[in-house]
Amino acid sequence: MRIVLIGYRGTGKTTVGELLARDLGRPFIDLDPLIEQQAGMSIADIFRRFGEEHFRGLESRVIAGLDPQAEDVISAGGGAILREQNVRLLRGNSLVVWLTASAETLHARIGGDATTAQRRPDLTALSGLAEIRHLLAVREPLYRGACDLEIDTDALSVRQIAERIVEKLTPRLL
Image (cartoon, rainbow, N blue to C red; front, side, top):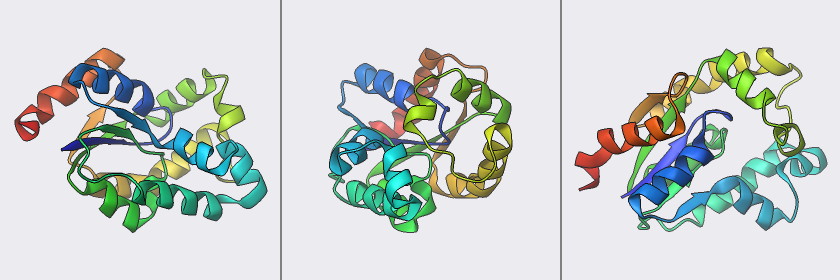
């Protein structure tokens, strides 16, 4: 079975996914760079030039192109759960792990990453902490409905998060 990491930006999907894949000896796939590669531009540029709906279409095509039988670790974009077809495809032959964090933690992490503003567009007319709180309120039920396991990343290191995932999922992975 593959492992799919979902959650809001800043929860650690990419960093945890890379470590988890290395620990398990599995390939790692980060969907955002695949989307950028397919589009030939950054996610921020896709949003700026074509809008969110176009981006979501690209995201859905990339997800549909994944091998459902592969035993890899996938980092899904924070909004991948907005389309039911994406959730259905990501859940196929997968264990889905929802990485969570408080809005305040996410705001601090995102603000501490200099590349985020360049690569990731604002998604609402709100900004900063207000946008995070709003989007978490909208997305939390979708994340919850899509996941097999929830891990709160607020007080855990990347290593601890990866270890907790392996510990919780090992019986299902055997």
